[in-house]
Length: 136
Length: 186
Image (cartoon, rainbow over all chains, first blue to last red; front, side, top):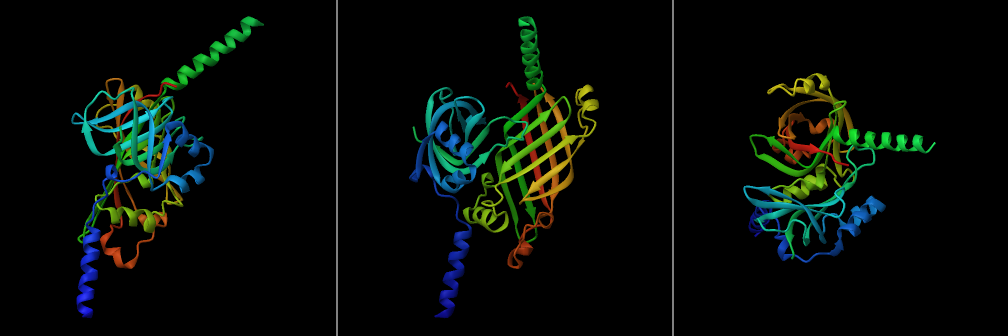
């Protein structure tokens, strides 16, 4: 009996180790915000925003400032109103190239945090979303 | 008096233009690391590295969020963040430094294959070390391709690897950085 449970435990562990990531498109977002709201939350208090948003799926809406493309597919988008305070999204699954540049898009993805430092040569800051998916 | 103010404002404006034109940047740089052992190979990628090179003085910096590294396996990504990198406590890794003899290489328009040395401070897991990182810069139209490959030892940055998985993680991790940098317009 004990051997059976050991086998079961090790099998589950191995299966779990091989697990991929959940499909973000099928998951509920914990928060829904505009680009300004989420960027300002990190600019105002980065530590508090890290605690509130990191590792959670958040839904962000804003104008598409830039597309990232690879082999003709869109692999990510940058949402921003001002070029320097940005939400940078990498898609979980690349999408067919469409005319979304300049339009307002809603994207959800796993929040990784905020990259920006007053001492940096690069002005502004970026909230990063990984494994993102377009909502509409 | 009025003329003086206008000249001062113009000078300030020209200064801003010069400042902006000297810097090239990206927010989409690629960083990957690769750990190779007989037990298993582990790799992760991050396509959101920010990087800036100041073409006036050769100052060079890059930064990544640790949580933006993506692994194929969800559990491996979780262990990397929670157990090894402690990314809630140390969310970023960065390099701040200066490329040696940058003016000379720049004035020769970055001859192909010339490897430069960037001296600076690499911060990982809250530990900052003086390092020298090799880098190449290649002109590509109005932009530049930058590339760098270097090795990092987890032990140097107080990254503790539990005994149970010690044989699965390399003593030295290969880090590959590549990016296309474009003029900073602000």
